[in-house]
Length: 144
Length: 144
DNA sequence: CTTGACCTTGGACCCGGGACCAAGGTTTAC
DNA sequence: GTAAACCTTGGTCCCGGGTCCAAGGTCAAG
Image 1 (cartoon, rainbow over the protein chains, first blue to last red):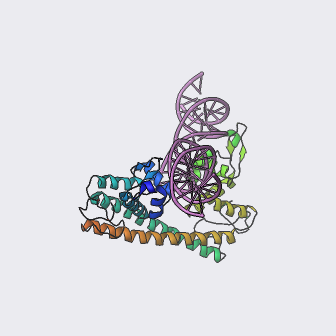
Image 2 (image 1 turned 135 degrees about the horizontal axis):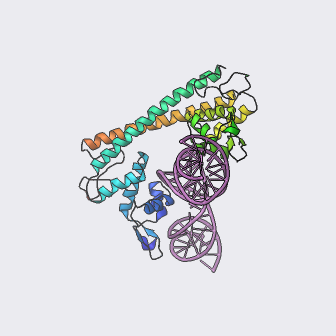
Image 3 (image 1 turned 90 degrees about the vertical axis):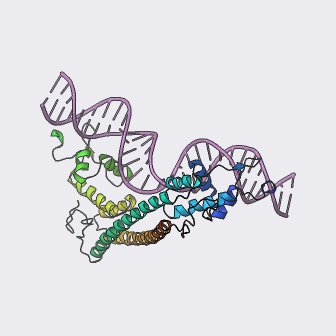
């Protein structure tokens, strides 16, 4: 620590941001987090800018963006420009994806619910799977 | 075919059910699909019961159940009992999961939408990520 | 000086559900 | 008879985002 006043090790930064050290090293390997300076012993020494970048990545992740997408945004940001236009595109795409997924899940939930109702009612003839019961004809199933 | 009248090869069964041959072999490896008889040449020879089982698995999959869960249901079913009680549990669990996921995604979508609105408005100070803009203070970001 | 917490590296492994491959055998159709 | 289309096996690879590991170096506290 004496040689790194004002600088953070990977664990310190990780703790500050709320991710794991492994995650930070992973981001570095993936090329979305610049390799920091090293201490004489080879320890990563992060400056304050790393804190903001890590939080940026973390927050993008929480928004469901993939690391590759975050990398795109950062690449623009790193040129000194506001990555708003690409961000807009990513956000729109992501909103579409999320909406589609919600719709899919709602349909699935309806299906599951009706299956559950049928099962509860003892009416072993629900929509899907068509019939939970065995082949022997005990309950007359389509499945064998 | 001559030696397997009334029996299906893996590709035939796969085509009938609408999955791939690889998927069927995968299910067999995973232990949820019984290994069928073999032709003298070693080809899998499926009887009619395989068709129903495969459809059952496929339909359970469409309901979002995992292969392991499907295996549980099949294990009960294979004893000759109706797997309704376990199915009920799986369905309830799955409905809960799906509901939670829908709620999560709806929250995420709201977040993304407000981010998008902020970005569109040029107000680079959205909730999350806190600021898309670069460190230089051009737009005064929290991220550095 | 020792203990324990931290750091380094590269690589293997995890989840789920297969896809795809090579190298060869079989069956079918013409 | 021969080509096409099927089948077999075991194996690796994919997606994403890491986690976990071993074997070793470093550093602060007591």
